[in-house]
Length: 450
Image 1 (cartoon, rainbow, N blue to C red):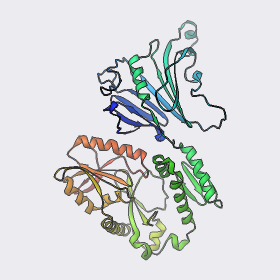
Image 2 (cartoon, one colour):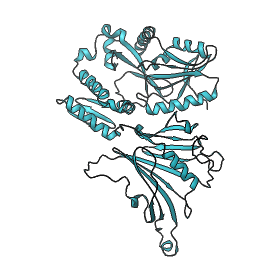
Image 3 (cartoon, rainbow, N blue to C red):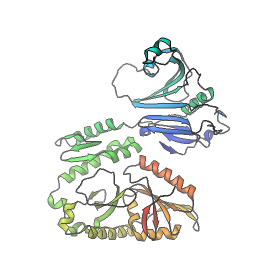
Image 4 (cartoon, helix red, strand yellow):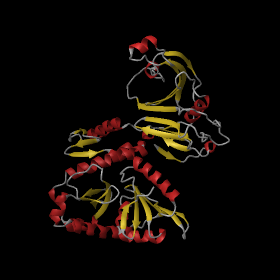
C-alpha cells in the first residue's frame, strides 16, 4: 500500500493512500491498518481495545470514538471491466454473489463523490452447515451488511462492511467507513492492468514493426523478433504517467529492434571505441536478466553490472564482449569506476538537503539519473558523505535513479526512510532494493538495525 501526504485541511493527520495501479486515492487515519494484496484493500483498527480511534481534525465530521469489541473490516475490491457492451451497465454487481440468502434490502444515501455510485444495506443468513444434524436442529445466524459500488470508466470498485453474527453493524464504524469512502478520488485516465497493458504493447509492436513477429512471452514480457523484453520497468513508468503510454513504449521497442539489426562488430565493438563509455550500474539480484550479462553480487540484495552508455540509452556488457576485449572482470570494474568518477565530475550532483550545514540530517538528488545510485559504489563518494554525516551513515537505494543518505543519529528518521524506501521500491521503475545500507570507513554493508 502506497502512502503520501495530502493538502485537505479537514483531515489533518490523515494519510493519503493509493489504490492498485494508481486507480484511486483515499484518506485514512494512522489508527487504521491498511492492507493491500493485488486488487483487495482491507481497513481495520490497529488495536480495537485501545482509545486510538480514527479521528479527523476538529473541522472534520469524523466520529470522536469508536468502541468495537472485535475488529470490523472494510473491504475494497477493484477490477477492470473490459467487456464491450452497448447497453448501459448497472453500477452494482449481483448481490446474491456477494451476500447469499438476502432477507432484507434497501437503498442508502449515495457517496458525495464525482464518480457514479450506489449504496445498499441488507441482512443475510449464513449458509447451511454441511453437517446433517446442524441442518435439522441448528438455527442459521444472520448478519447485517453495507455495500458501496463505484463505477468510473472501466473501473469497478466495490466496498463492503459486514457485522458479526446476530449483531447490527457498529454505527460509529459505519459512519467512519462512509467518511473514508467520501474521500475517494479517481484517476482521470485510469491505467490499464498488466494483462491489458501487455496486449496494448503487442498491438503497438505489430503496428510499428509489422515484419517482426510479436507475441506474449513467459512472465510479464513480450517477444519481438528474436528478443524477449521484460515489461516490468515499462509498466512502472506507465503507472506514473499513463497518458504517455506510446512515449514510454515506442522508444524502448525501437532500441530493441535497432540492436537486432547490429552486426557482430557492432554488438561487440572494439574496446577503443567504447572504452570511455563503460560505466557501472546497480541492479536487483531478483531482476530478470540474461545469463551472458557480466554481473557480480554486492550487498543488500544488489548486483553490480556494466553498461556501454549510448547517451539516450545504454546496453549491458556481456561475457563475449570482455572476452573479445581480453579484459578480466576486475579490469572491467576498474575501468568502469574510472569512467564513473569522470562522469561525476562532468555531471555534478544537485541535491536537496534537510537540516543545516552543521547538522545535516538527510540528502537526496534533485534530478533522476540512471547513474545516481552507481555513485554509491565509489569510495571517493563515501568520503564526501562521511564528511557531512559522520563516520557512519544510512543510504537507501529504492530504484536506479534515486538514493537517500541520512545520519545514523536519528532513529525516528531512519524509520521514516525505511518506510519511504519500501514504498518507492514497490512503485518506482527500475527497482533496486528495499533494504537499507550503511556506509562507513570499511565500505558498504547492509543495515541490520530495527
